[in-house]
Length: 112
Length: 115
Image 1 (spheres, rainbow over the protein chains, first blue to last red):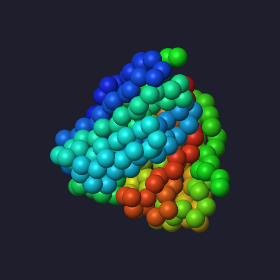
Image 2 (cartoon, rainbow over the protein chains, first blue to last red):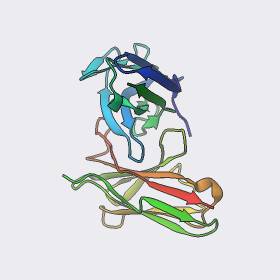
Image 3 (spheres, rainbow over the protein chains, first blue to last red):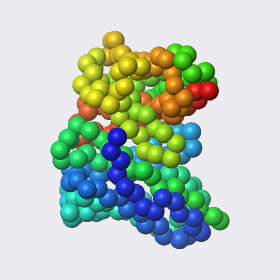
Image 4 (cartoon, chains in turn yellow, orange):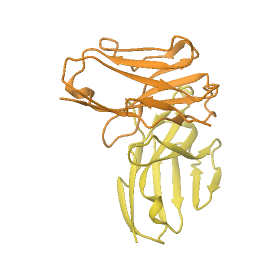
């Protein structure tokens, strides 16, 4: 099935550093969501975006809905060890708003 | 409030055997989803239920996969017979109504290994 392209595939950073990751599509999307998945658990919703250009924060996390509606970005400031996990973007494409399509994931590792 | 419950958490079977996964969604959630998550990838939708009705099963391999949600609450996903390529995590999620703006809450998943 279709999956959104996420980059980078993995990141290894030091505690306290800022992190940026993005998600792109060849199609226009109506919503963008960012999830975090810990080992052995299901994904947990972090941030939801519903409008082009929208910028939303959740604590140290900030996400943006790209102006072209074909991309989204997630930033994590001042990373801490518990930020470790896999971050997935997801979205509902304009051609099928009932479907949620996930990205390929960005694996984040934080070293103390 | 209890989250989405799935069982078993782990299952190891030999190829050609049948296997079934069970999901209990969050109380009051009308919409239930089954996703397949292969190693290193994001979840992919297999089937979506609105109450008892399967409203999107276009990605469900119907030759070997089946699902049911008889009373609009619990759901079961079955594979018969299992193949080596079915090894993956099977996630169940639920949401209040199924609208794009409704948050999907995921269970911990069932990790299936087919030998």
